[in-house]
Amino acid sequence: MSQSEVLCLDRVCKQFSGSSLAAVDQVSFELEAGEILGLVGPSGCGKTTLLRMIAGFESLQSGSIQLAGETVATAQRSLPPETRSVGMVFQDYALFPHLTVLDNVCFGLRDRKGSAAVARQALALVGLEGLERRYPHELSGGQQQRVALARALAPQPPLILLDEPLSNLDVQVRLRLRQELRDILRQAQATAILVTHDQEEALSICDRVAVMRLGRFEQIGQPEELFQHPASRFVAEFLSQANFLATEYQGDAWRTVLGDFEAPGGLEGSRTGGEPPVVMVRQEDVLLHPHPEGTGLVRDRQFLGRDYRYFVQLPAGLEIQVLGPVSEAIAVGTAVQVQLRTGQARLYPYDLPLVLRGTSTRNAAARA
Ligand SMILES: Nc1ncnc2c1ncn2[C@@H]1O[C@H](COP(=O)(O)OP(=O)(O)OP(=O)(O)O)[C@@H](O)[C@H]1O
Image 1 (tube, rainbow, N blue to C red):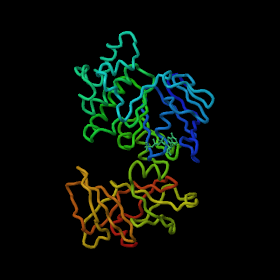
Image 2: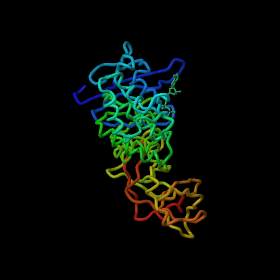
Image 3: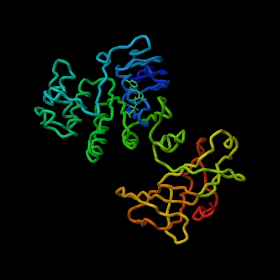
Image 4: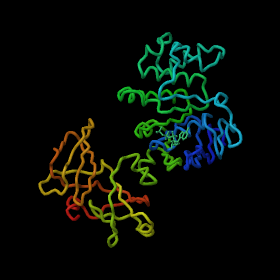
């Protein structure tokens, strides 16, 4: 563990009794001081279990956890949560209803000298000056979550664990608090792990994001890296809700309902493997052109504020989702030609970038 590392997990495993699958399976990663790691993945993939193991609420079957240079958990030995100096923020805030805001924050400081002054500082950091004497029921959801954050930050623990901290808030408060949360953690120079079911939240406020699947880390990396180079179809699908097109290898190109693609640098080695490859096309990389002879049909559309999400039926029963600007609205029932922006498709499971053959794919769907 290097000096700047706050947390180090080495092949950590957890299998609950009575379960045939590991809830957390061989997870290893390190966290540098000041880093915010996002943990995302489908329900049941092991996010909360992993967080609880780091906090000390769950035991390990194998592997080890080091926190601030000290081994806090192995299969044989585990330090109790109260000795681990980890701050926790939960989805339901978990404030004491009979204590004032100030006393809630002081609680985490456990009679430390000058605790009221430290608590006031933490409350100022989260923008709650003046509300110290209120009780939790006299605060909005967003304010209560800030109190919970102040309580976790006040003792300045080496690590803060946040389990879905914004998910109980309505969408507007959540969006505002999302950026505030990042600012507050940065200002406090906190090292944090944020569990969220909201991919956008993780990508927008975390320095690195880990995508979990069946107890394992499918990929961990910077948000841009994950989005631009998802290591698997699962990661691509989970983070960007992209379209996946079936392929047929013909001659020297991958044929799809939206056109023929080739992999720059050649296709050698990419044609083997069990699973038939699919081409990933993002919703924002498809253009729709209303045209009476278009082979696509707009079946439905969702209003998303700045964009519409179109559900476009293509020949051969395929339906794709496409994002288009509200300023160029296309009515449901319109026939459309479908065109891809060039250079944006990828082939999975090989994670190869693809280029589109020819100059236009407008009529490519007609072939199918
Ligand atoms: N105390 C427990 N006893 C037995 N199985 C458990 C226990 N806690 C969790 N599990 C199982 O472990 C797996 C991982 O659960 P976990 O709560 O960590 O997932 P999660 O990714 O946090 O899910 P969600 O997003 O729904 O909160 C699941 O299959 C779950 O049913």
